[in-house]
Image 1 (cartoon, rainbow, N blue to C red):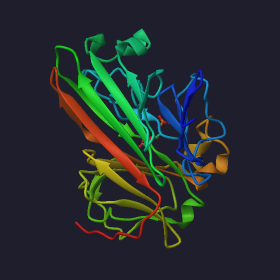
Image 2 (image 1 turned 90 degrees about the horizontal axis):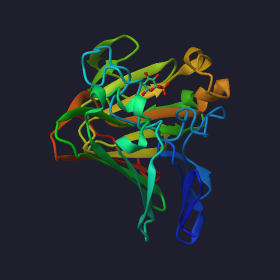
Image 3 (image 1 turned 120 degrees about the vertical axis):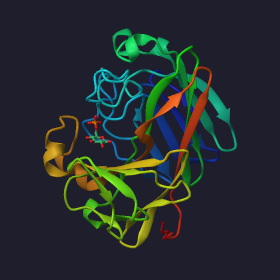
Length: 300
Ligand code: BG6
């Protein structure tokens, strides 16, 4: 069975190869496992809540309509909690939409959101439909999002795929092709041009790389070997995050405490400004995570 639905999740396996699979929790439409030839590619905390009581710490949480927490209360997204409401609402499973490359869809609209939470977005005046599509390739995973404004008023939103990759050790990995990109360092609250030839990790790291051309690959390289190549469609920004020791200690659902060694978030999105979507319009974006590739060194 390539697609299996249970009460709380959907499991998709590659045709004739049940060692390659993806599992999506209906809560948050959060991808909580992606295996290629039996090997898990995503990091999920051992303390993650998978019962719908809290956004999942790991996998691919979906961030909409606000990234982070806006300080400006007067903005329509100003009252929303950190990272919005998509990751903590239960999405509707819409079914299978592709067979050779098995593909499944999930939908979210105002009716799926806790009414108190929904009201925090512009007082509850926006009408929208989100369609999230997950497509399994033999050596890649594609996630697509489409946002449609089905109401009468334009709205502003951010989108982000908050992808947690599983890695052997953070102190050994490099991320390439971000040199000379503009970045906002969330820890320093400063914007500057990234000058490192490759990004390396030796302390807490939280940067938004802005307007990175979509023909640029972002690669996670472990001791000279490409672990993951990321492609993006219509997603200009990429957040790179590792909480390191102190921040992990402060997150009750982050386990084991040394787990920061084995995870790295590279999060493609549209977050450094808002997408403004007019009534009746649609917007879409995609991330493609590929497991086989040579090192692609690109400059600006
Ligand atoms: C990242 C942000 O995307 O998400 C970080 O850049 C944040 O600043 C992290 O700490 C985790 O957020 P949360 O809400 O899942 O704890």
